[in-house]
Length: 617
Image 1 (cartoon, helix red, strand yellow):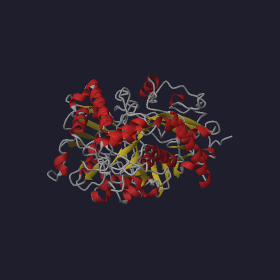
Image 2 (tube, rainbow, N blue to C red):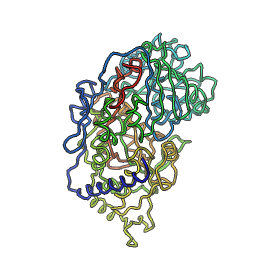
Image 3 (cartoon, rainbow, N blue to C red):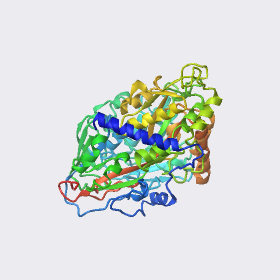
Image 4 (cartoon, rainbow, N blue to C red):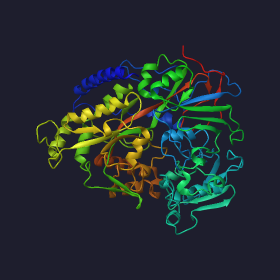
């Protein structure tokens, strides 16, 4: 989009938003936009959603996630072979860390999912099944899992996937020279502490029984172990064993020539831009129907055109803000949709990460240390209006840090700060943030200038206006919030600086894919590198430990724990959720046998009804 037209669009949109926001007040009814019970049950079973030609907007111009199916309608029989063109929607290159133990950003995961996979299958409740590349058993104590890898499961170079490959992955992640962020996924394994400390040559809780069988023993029973909580991504030991752990993430074996045991083999990589894959004939579920897949990065601004012209058959996720503009015209694709395992949020920098100690340290003197300031900033923004205005109902106001995609644990009854600028002003006044010099901007508690530096990522057309809206909303209550470096930050730069605790960042707008495990230790635990706010408290430690304890094998007990934890995070506000979201995935009419169900692992089954993509009419 040209800069001039963007400016006009932005100003018009902000005028509309300001009208909407000025009509709201602190007495307005809270609207959470939660999925109803029917949708939750459909997500759990993966069934029950009726197929529709297209989602239709309601009379108010808003869409609902209930209008979308999770399974694509086949428009005909698949031909033999063909190449699927896949778009990775991003305004930046993918980083290219193509290994499960080392990657951090979702774009790299999207690249890996065609050639890499985990050993254990899951159902739509994220519980382990016996349908994966390996089967499993657990002892009566719930602490020892025996995993048996299928005899027909092989790496792309023809070597069998062995038990020692999974053992090797644990040794890499547990190595003191490990540079990734996945240690939290193995820290419950017996003997991992001694191994990491250099006091043992082997991890005592990881035992190779035979070539295809491994036993994993954990320190204590944990309900997450049965719900995608076991690290089950092996590393080919015969490839990595001679590479120093500290150098693995930058090695050619990760960056240029990655292998897996998934349905497709990496053929060529244009760093950060594209990847071509060919079918892996020896794939454990059978030779894929397709000859191959071509993945390329597609800018958010051009994704609709790429789908319309057949440049790509599908993309990882379609920008929800663009859907209303193409719902009627993009008639050569079918849009699938469901509530995402993700949310956007505002985070407050409260400390730093002590790499030597391996834990987060909260600084009581941090600029954003006052919870009153954080609570006022939550009250100052209207996320309901944002979801309706920018996404036409396909994103909606978030409430707690456990998303509705976990219906057993998401607590919709918790009262959270809602849009109420009067309450925000009251909180700031009572807390002592006064406008000392009468210029309309509040000073800090010492009467000194208060400038809050805000980091936000670049992205689609809405990234800039949403960031501007937040700053204007905070300005309405007298807070001077400025973008870091005067503009939006590129994806990789944003996370590099946030992760490094850049002192120039006070608050940030981030987004989390939650993963399939409701355990919050990986995002908000004391030792979690992903805990970017650097929030810690004894109560947080206590609740996160309880949620992952033997007692939480009782689901009702675990529900109570996470209800209390959600309330704690609303009380302490190290971060606050802004929007829950629908994930929309379009697929060209020629694509067959595709699904976005959580349990789906059928890339080998996808076919095409014709050689060339169907074009929009």
